[in-house]
Length: 154
Image (cartoon, rainbow, N blue to C red; front, side):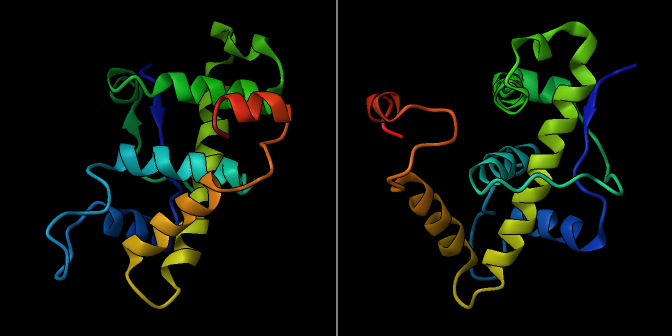
């Protein structure tokens, strides 16, 4: 069976995901070029704000080969290792666990994006501000020593 990554299947979050990948009246381009890219950002944001939410319903899944082709599977794997704090999560028998971790952080990130987009103003500006807030944080991510954080610009 082909591996797939699914977005959360709630109507609100599916509509949000569609908004993120569709050009609007005031914008020539969409915020993200594809649902795969939007989910990548959402998972990173979910991790950043420590929002991991189980999927109660699953949306239309995206083939995992699309993530692999964009070299995003490395991020999926790194996220799983960071969450599990165990390199054994990279074993072939734990693929489903890695995908579930990614999906749950993407779900949490989409909830955060939904919150940001409810703030008055340009939705793109809200998303960019979230990136800037994360980037300029003085606190290194959990598990990263301050010296390593400075070395890698975290």
